[in-house]
Every structure is written in structure tokens, then in C-alpha cells.
Image (cartoon, rainbow, N blue to C red; front, side, top):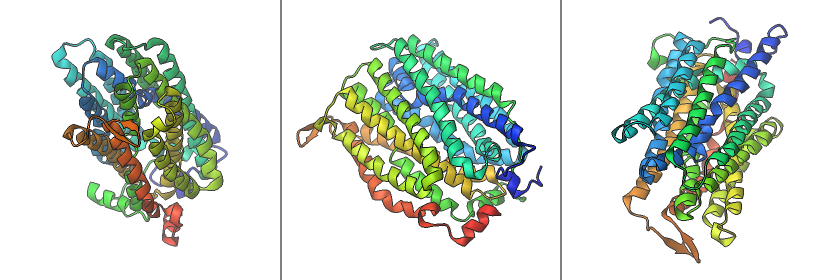
Length: 441
């Protein structure tokens, strides 16, 4: 329906379609609750422990964990153009199938011959990343018409709260299976359950309503991409998201490596701390959505930005208070809560800036830069650690620190210095009239 009005594209209220929208919102939440297990496994240490159990070194683990973000960054823009051109739901359906197949390959690595472990992991993570790019290229554009603009913060907060609560329950359940130095087959069993969640999303996606078809600028990919990139205020905002991601995305992995290798905590404790990460994400989603709608994105961005720097500094200086898992859990919880609230603000700001045409392509520009930030954050951290420029052990003021702490110190410093990048966010500096006209066009 290329002739859809701007009001339709932004999900204006329509009594006749409200039952369809309501059903679509429920399906969207259910889908994410099924697929969230993969995100949780990648972020809270389950995949990391699995890779270590397979005998992969810490640098190799960081590279493998960065691979999905790197491939996603390369694939998300061309797949978004395909979504705008060939149909949002059609491309998303293919993406959902790819993610399911890709993640299903990860537990297979535990049973293949040793020579095939690396290729199987790479193939699985690559297929998962390509599928995520295909699916994400249309996700926001399909779901946005299901939600009234005035309720975006609350809906995205509710969606995040739902899937992160599901991930939290799953993470807690995993602690019953994962013991100290768990064998690879136990961790592979956990990942097999995670893969089932990907297949569940692929099935539920078939019933998601498609109320709008994103229009594409005639003249080919380059012209459509240029038109999307010229959206007033959008590229500066994307640059801010990239910078913030660059100095925060690798931190959960660094947390887990410090816990496992520097503090010598057990696998079970690392999983519990991963549960603290998910608990913080749930809390951030619960508070972040209403905060965005009530106080505005400007306030949320500013508070989250400074909170990141404080939490990272406290994690490095943990020895001043306690090296015990309880204090680490508090800091991990706080970091995840800030990240979740910031993610809701980013999504709300992005949807407010999207143009009427090339919507999937415009989303993909931000997703590409955000994914580049994730990949660059992890790969740069791995490169610094591998370079040998950092000492295996060092101390400041009586604090015994590791090379991972040195990288965290750099992240904490840069995220504070990059506060000037807040000037790139339209909701922080105020939207000029040109942006306001573009948003309602």
C-alpha cells in the first residue's frame, strides 16, 4: 500500500484497526520473548562459558563474540533496501528462519570433530547475524504502526520489560544446570533450548499484521540511501549512538572475563552475575519507558550518559569496597539498567526522526552504526589485550588490577569525555523547525 498516509505510517489511532493492532502488539511481545534467549546467552556469559569449555582462548572468544555485530553491520543496510523494495514481512520471514538455523548450529559444535569446531561456530554465528540483519531491517517499521506515537515509550518499555523478564527467568533456570567448570555438553544443551526460542519466533512472525509498506525512493539503492541519510538531524544522532556504543558495548564481556579469569569465580557465579545483568535490564525497561514519555528523551539521555561513566569507574575501583560477587552484582545490575533505559530512549528518538519514505533503510543506517560500535568496541578491546602493551597485573592506590581493568578504565574515561556528543542528539539540543516538518511529513 504505497499510498499509505503519513498518519497511517506512524500508527495514528483507527478504531476499526485497533483490534488488529492490539493483536499485533501481543504477537510482537511474544515473539521477542521467544527470541530474547539468544540475546541473553550472548550477553550474560552463557556463550562465553561455552566457547571456553570448547577450549577457545580469551582473545578468540572476544573475536567470535564480536563476529555477529561485525557481519550485522555489513549486512543491515542492503537488507533494509531489500525490505523496502521486496516487502517488509517477506524479508523478515527469511531473517527469522536464518537466525533459527544459525543459532541451532552452535550446540552442534560440541559434537563435531575438533577440526570442525571453529568452522561450525563461525557458520552458526554468521547465519545468525545475517538473519538478524534481515529481521531487524523490517522489525521497527512493521511494529511502529501498531503503536500510537504518544505511547511509544511505554510500549517499547513494556516490550523490553517482557522479553528481559523472560531472559532473566531463563538465566536463573540455567544456574540449576550450570555448576563449577561445567562440561561443554551441559552448556550445549542450554544453547539448544535457546535455539528453540528462535524457531518459536519464526512461527509467530507468520501471524504478525503488516499495516504499512515502506516506500522506497525511485532510482536505485544509492539514491534511496542518500535520501534516507539526508533526513534532518538523523545522521548526527546516529553518530552519537555509535560513540556511546563504542565505549560501552564490550563492558559486559570484560566484566565476565574479570570475574572468570582475574577473580577466579566459578561458572555458576558468573551465570548468577549474568542474571544480575538481565535483572538490571528488566528494571531499566520498567522505569525507562515511562521516564521517556514523562520526562522526555533529553533527560533520559543526559542521566544515562553520566551514569555509565560512574558505574564503570566503580567497577574498576571495586577493591575499595569489595571484590565479592554481591558488590559486582550491584554494579552489573546498575550498568544493565542504564543501558536498557538508554536503549528505549534511542528507539523513541529514532522513530520520531524517521522519514515517510525509505523507513527501513533509515532504520538500517542507525542499526549499522550501532552494530559497528558493538563490533569495534569488542575487537578494539581484544586488539589492545593481545598487543601486549598492558601489564598482566598492575596496581593503583593499593588496588590489584588486571589488563581487563585497564581497558575498562579507558572506556570510563572516554564515555565521560564524549559527553560533548550529546549535542548531536536533536531531542537534547531541541529540534529545529526543519526537523519538526520532516517528522510530520
